[in-house]
Image (cartoon, rainbow, N blue to C red; front, top):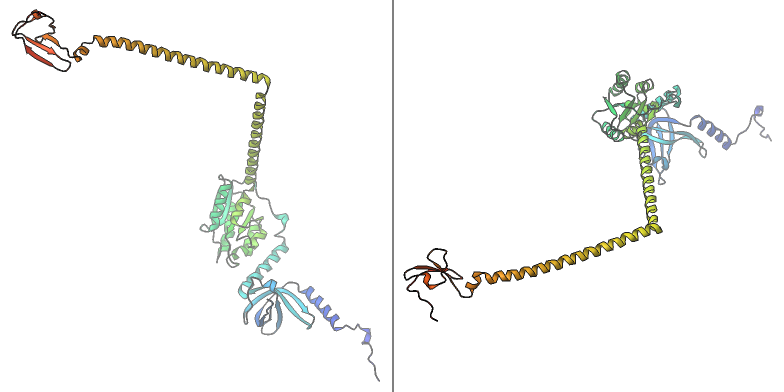
Length: 409
């Protein structure tokens, strides 16, 4: 009976699991990060949330797994959809087959842009354009800022509004450009050149609002990246929203999350000075209040001292004396007035008694001769036929004398 011997030449014999593990290690080390383009087929969306599909082209295919955690908010894989998948190559040991573990799934058109973005980013980073050592600090207290942006977009309004709040005296020179579409990158490069040659500005800000990767693509162009890197002026990239990154962000001396944030970054020294002045003002007010409170406490403490209490008591005593003197004077004046009123009343009574009108009111009358002022007091002052005027308490009468005679009595 023939028995099996060892391999010729004494080569090592691997178990299935050992050889599979070796292949797994080799493949995963070689392909930790790849982009693969192809068409989806045999797509299965599992109840666990994971997606399994095959990515194929005309000549070959590769199995793919898109785990639930990576799928959140991502493109949903569909049968026949042409995509670009980013992930790592792994080996599924149980079946002895390799697969692509997908991290990002993009529609083919957008995926090509991402691939181009990553290719340029890697190349420029290798050249050293992103190195921190070549980045320059922004000028302190800039007086004039060059702003490259669309003159009609929200970015220019936001930047100017915030800048005016921080420091109203700063000048902002707006160099209008297209910020997306054909020719936008060339306009941005020309604007950088103009500001470097003629702008007389302290620094430059590239600003644009948020958008898709297609909208922001002008700031991913190589000519823009190189124009930024060769600029003699410090450049701030304020493109898109906080989550957006462009090649311009990596090359620029400073990256701002938004155009509004760029205003605060460029004018940071003004913000710092104003913050310090505000702090000094608050400290001065606090110290002043503390001193005033201390002085008030000291004044209050003086009031409790014996010598000052004696002065206070004397002042209060003198005030009481003044009040009493005023009261006495008021009473004397009142008594004098009452006495004068009584005396005046007596005199008025005498005058009233002598008043002829008072006598007339009691039923008497006064007789005057004719229309003269001669008062008739005797019978022999008139003769029969004379006219006399008789004055009563109310009214008068013109009378003719019939006779006059002596009272016989």
